[in-house]
Length: 434
Image (cartoon, rainbow, N blue to C red; front, side):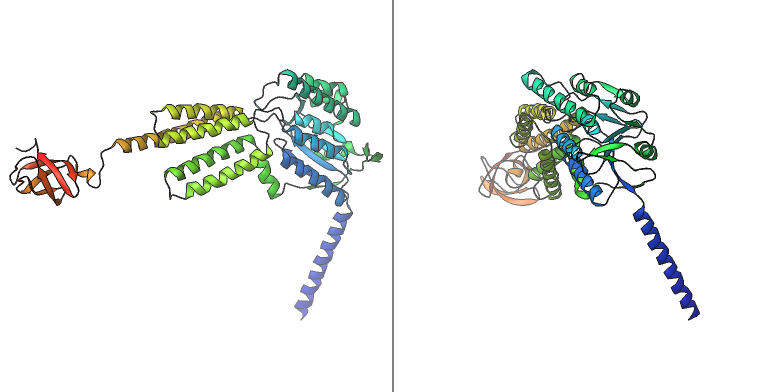
């Protein structure tokens, strides 16, 4: 009984300590921290919107977005900027760690923050709009997009009190600067070596929340980290144009293997899953429909080569069409996303080689001498077992057959099968007969 009392008292002490620790944590001010490392896409947009709502609901003093991005979709960027400009909690964008950058779309997101910060050894800029292949958009459309993006950048800088002239030049001349230059010309507010340094430097600054000035109280705040949900992780992964392209190629190859070898099942199932995921990613990404059409044409020509061999004409045309379509697939004005050229070359070469190899095997099998049935006996050498006058019996391929010849052939002589009529063979004296 004494031992039980001791255990009971210890349990009460542990439970009480846990409650006190939780109460202390709950009373300690905290900030939320999320990390964006990659392209800007709808999944990132959803993640930031959800994070802003959560920070408001759990009473966070601020939301820190640690950012490292080469750019992304302009449509997603505009939505994110709108959410940040109207955020009910202070939003701090921190371009980190060292070596990271806020390129293209990252420029607008960083400038839209209440507090813009960068780590040592980072850079920001190069926000000129480009097509999906990385080239400049020419003509009237290019001018319209550039003017719109420049005014978009300028309006963000004006609202947050940042350097509007640089914001315009980042778009029109694609300028890029380091964290030291950015701080000097008032593109950002803070250069911080880590999160704790960032909180100390942001402490006491006043920001505009819903039209009211609010002083930040962040010194000593606890940092609570949050990651993407499973759905957001999946969407963020397949929204990468390289992943989307590889899924599409894998899906096409899997279905082709299933159609050319019915009953294997696994390639067809895997191919269907990959193709559906590819379609889902293409819904998230802006695509060039001319490029998609060329890919579909290329696949059609390759399949045509497999089932109607054209001595390589259809196959070569299919590979060329597939390659051109792959290069043009994400060539749009709505993003600066591209597929790595090495991935395109490898995928097209692999798929083209496989399809052409299958086509060659099919062609060779069609030209090969039949090995089964009556046709498989043509050309075989047999022995006369019942004198042919002109009909009789021959022994061919391990079996006795009724046979007919144009002349009499004695028992024991060698004969060659030259044809058949019903279940009777047509034979002639073989030149091998000694």
